[in-house]
Image (cartoon, rainbow, N blue to C red; front, side, top):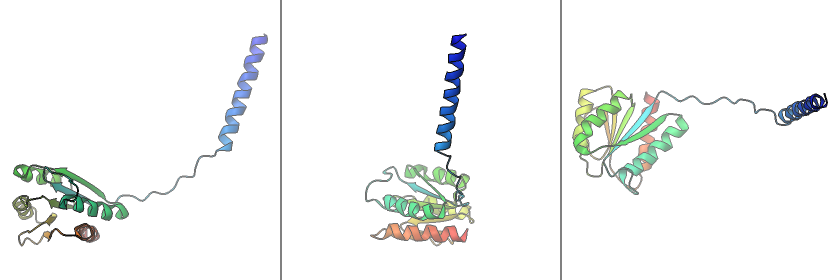
Length: 160
């Protein structure tokens, strides 16, 4: 009998303690979150990837600087230049709104130009020299590449 009384008292104290803890720290009120916009910026780099100081690193920083405030998505892949056609095709299938190409030697340019011709509604940005396709914009490497990429991504998102 005594053990039942101790158990009841202990249970009552435990419930009171738990109730006291939950009222002392109310749950935070839910806040509205900004939904992602339907814009995906995708960077393709050569196998050097995001090497410090490279045009790809600057392009990636500019892409992130643009997509963060826009609540847009960004991602990147690395590919061997000989397999760039397949990698770009994969990015198109992943619904990338803007495909940004940044290779150290410009060897992605033919693959970008071929993809641009085959997919006229797809938008491309190439770091380096590009052909005259209407859906390909080119930016030359330089000190302000990160800012120019940020501007280009922002403009592309506004137009989509």
